[in-house]
Amino acid sequence: MPTLRLTAGEIDYQDTGGEGPVLVLLHGVNMDASLWRDVVAELGPDFRCIAPTLPLGSHRRAMDRPELVTHHGVAAMVGELMEALDLSAVTLVANDWGGAQFLLADGPNDRIAAAVLVACEAFDNFPPGRPGRAIATSARVPGLLWAAMQLQRFTWFRRAPGAWGWMSKRPIPRQVMDRWFAPALGDPAVRRDLRTFALSTPPPTELRRLVERLPSFDRPVLVLWATEDMLMPREHGGRLASLFPHGRLVEIDDSYTLMPADQPQRLAAELARFVTEVQSTST
Image (cartoon, rainbow, N blue to C red; front, side, top):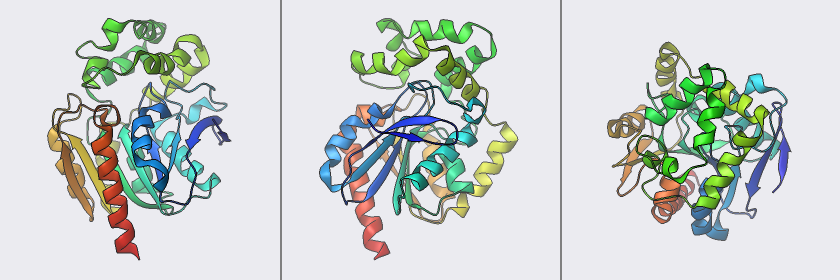
């Protein structure tokens, strides 16, 4: 897996290469780029898929500048990645983590031709639901985040209601979750980065200002929302799509938040259709 040195530190990323339309695929907390593995396989060689592993708790290299691991800081890292790889006409795709909205609202977003927001944090739902609040709470108490990470070892916790059982409707393969949780279990510096991020949740006033700025992103936006989502309120999908001058909503059945895991074929088809439409209207 190639690596890229950014201002905050070195990150891993996957790049399928090729001359096709570019998609940059973003994940949430305690996950890595492998969240997108089935979607990337479905999209195939017609698309260039770039999936960074962001420093959100499943990264294998602790950041050199942990103070930059905030919602704003990680959004800035995505912008820096696009610049470092000299990407253009990017379709930015984000699932679960809502901080990418800061990049859409505030930039730099000149390399982004379109965006797809997939069952993600929005409005006042930062952090999302009971699992998100649990991480935020454990980050405030010394030693509690370490204890919370230990629970990730157990299958019963990985499928427990109110925890990961509300993230995906179908079990994620054990080896994938083992990979996701190993860095924070074994490396105190990775837990430090995760703690910094968890404590950076924007206050309500800032989140309200973000909502006011989102209409400034005047390029096509597709909002994909799971009708059975346990963490992201269903009404947020329509509200989020309506904020953008060129936004629209598509709802997906039989999925929870992690649509790349629950519905990779349907998600890949919607992405391919959207990117094709964007290209046809821009030529």
